[in-house]
Structure formats: C-alpha cells, structure tokens
Length: 255
Image (cartoon, rainbow, N blue to C red; front, side, top):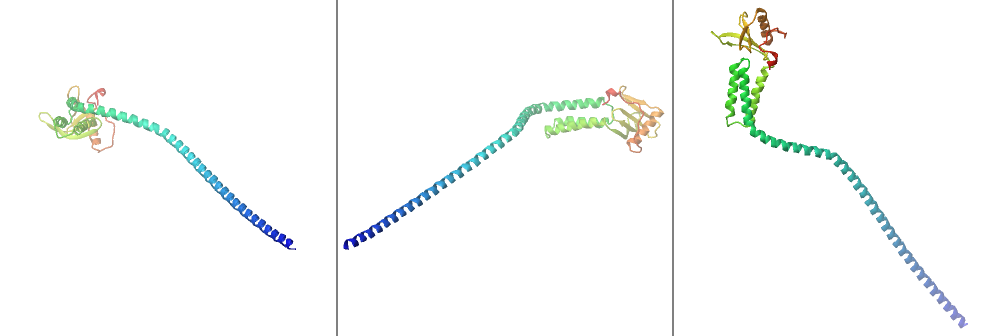
C-alpha cells in the first residue's frame, strides 16, 4: 500500500514536472514567435522604407529628366538670340571703330559742307540773299569757335542745310526792296525754286527772275494777273489754284 502511494506521489510529481516543462516550452515558443513577428515587422518596415526611397529616387529622376528637357528647349530658343546679340555686338564694335574715324574726319567734313552751302546760295536765285549769306557767314565763324562741341556744330550746319532745302518746297510772299536806281518797294512771290516774281504795289508792273540771264524779265498783262492771283493764294486771300507763269529756271536745274 505504501509502495502504491509512493508511485502515485511520484506520478503526480512527474506530471507536474511535465506540465512545468510543457509550460516552459510553450513560453519559449511564444517568445520565439514574438521575436519572429518583430523580425518580420522590422524586415517589412525596411522593405517599405526601401520601396519609398526607390519611389522618391524615381520621382527625382523623372524631375531631373523633365528639367533637362526644359533646359534643352530653352537653349534651343536662346541660341538664335545669342547669335543675334553676338552679331549686334560685332556691329557695334565696328561702329565704334568707324565712329572714331568719323570724329577725326568731322571737322573737315563740316568745313566742306559750309563751303558747298555758300556756293549753293551764291549761284541760286537771289531771294533773301543777304539773310542767307549771313547764315553761311555765321556758320563759318562757328566752326572756329572752341565753346561748342562737334555735335553742336554739326547740328547747326545740318539745320542751315535743312533751311535751304526747305525753300524748294514752300511758297512765300513778302514785301521788300527791289534794288535799282532808285530802289523800289515791291511784293515778291516765290514758288519754291521754280519761280521768283515781283509786282509793284499798284499791280501794273512786274517781272520774273531768269537764272540763266541773271536778271529780271518783264511780264505781260496776263502774267501779271497770275502773279496777283498767286500773291492772294499765298496770303490765304483765295483758294489754291493752278498758276500759268513763266519759270525762273528749267526743270532739270530746279531743286
């Protein structure tokens, strides 16, 4: 009986030990499972992170490609502009070199222009003769003046030429003195450089200046009537109309 109880006691103890061993094994398995799960989660996180890094790198690569494409397109558009600017710079450089040469030649050029202007006035119809010669004399004095720059001198020379050329495009009428013995006061009519006429205040005498002869030539009654009409037109006393008058110089010599 005592032996049986001892066996039962050892059996209970063995069963308890078996249970304890089984519980310990189960705990170990649970720990290993948890470790495996943590390891799997960490691995998955690494994979996810790696995927995100790859995706970010792909996005950056696509952006870099797009930026490269835009830069290439911009360079293609910019190339002709740069080429034109290069040509412009070359032209300006050449212009500066030419400008330096022009500055050196400018004084002589202006003197030549004034000399030609004087010759022009002296051989032209002698209307406003004293006034025009005085303008030329003023230019001749100006060229030797030190208080003006070359640009200012050139502008005055060009202005005088513009004034002379303007005479050929305008109609003019004024009362002035006709040289002679004795001098007489008359009304002058000028039609550009084509015709220059005078008419006495009473309207009964008049003449046309003839360039080739260098003198006045008397007008007949019909021409005098045309001069009277021309004076009224220029003075805006009647509407514009055609004038039938002899000219002062032939057309091919007119300016």
